[in-house]
Length: 148
Image 1 (cartoon, rainbow, N blue to C red):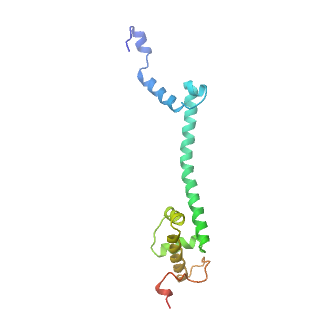
Image 2 (cartoon, one colour):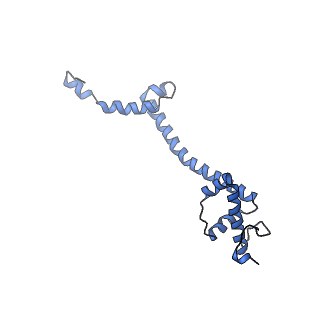
Image 3 (tube, rainbow, N blue to C red):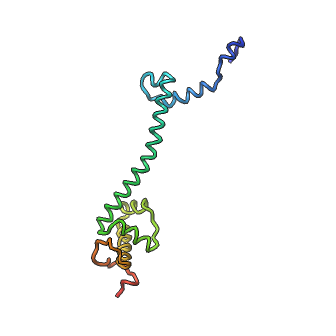
């Protein structure tokens, strides 16, 4: 850029303003009307959209957590054991699986999840936890205190 006078040089804000505005206009490219073309309106709408996106990332984590909890509760109810008993029984057996892994096992590996519920149920019966729904001990699990 060539300036023929000192007046024009001082009025020029340089390339920084161009790139700053360009960044906002790129984010507002899919808007309609003046929200896309007018900088002062575009910057307000882009700012609001970025706030919504930040909030949505947090809410997505909450939604995924709630979905996993519901899947685990449904899977444990299907196998006749309480969710709290499952978690407590697995912890007492030193099987340290988080809820994400347990939810994935309940969907994609139902036999493995059934084995885990049997182990947790047997341990709950051995330790006499009060939340068990099954009256008998699963036949597929051998625990020292339960062999007669």
